Image (cartoon, rainbow, N blue to C red; front, side, top):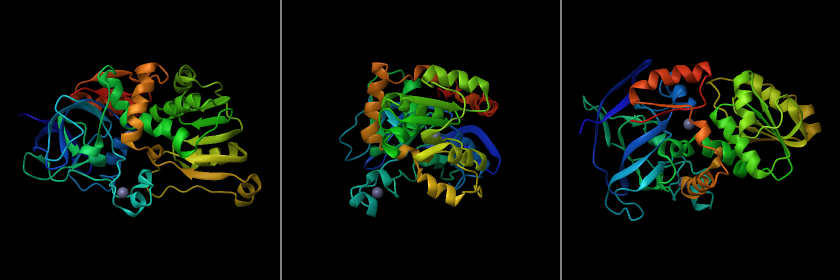
Length: 343
Ligand SMILES: [Zn+2]
Ligand SMILES: [Zn+2]
């Protein structure tokens, strides 16, 4: 098989190249990747020289495809199953998992040693998935079966942006019906926060972004206002000093600020402590919306099929794997919600 993948070989060196994909080991599955969203975190991996992933790195972590082969002991999946790949899996054994908090698992399992460069060097798949590739191998728990009726280029978005955004509202913040919500940063994750707020029954959904095009899109997904204003729940999807301080400034008394966006290394924000105290505000960190793929992907897929969640409008365009570089350029330029690569 001539498998290919987009590899960060050394700092600043990214290329589409042939890779070697081994058969799945016990408890693992081999997946033919059919669609993968181009997420900001992959850019973060490139710009932060691997972002804790040992080089060389196989990029991509928002994928969906079809199971090709399963390893020994895999009972829940079979060849031909349509799956969405999840990165926020639970090991079942760590302190958090044993305490009944798998969403806070600190040791998500990986299928190590299955992916290699042509020269034999072991590839580290981004967030244990590595989806900018024709094939990848993941632990069984990271491949979640979804209905084939959901178009694969939409299904892949559930794997990161949609799970992160929607579950930040429903799981991390548990926004109640009638609450006022504000969202700073209206890319794919921010638009998913807006959709989550709509599903939660928020009374107001304020979209905040410097890019007028994104505000226009935000309205389509359910934003009711596009001017900054007080809110009970303020989601910072950007994670910069300026946006976090803006979020603190917008939170209503007794309200909650939720940090979702990945900040660059060393980023710091100032908090006016007396003001925070007087407002009795809470600050929460959303780690990917604290989602759990096995529990959340099936219902997100179901909501998409029912039309409760609009995934189709989030796919701006599709492109072959060769288009990875243009996809990053379009993302930086802000002209796309999501480019989905179809390997
Ligand atoms: Zn665990
Ligand atoms: Zn992502």
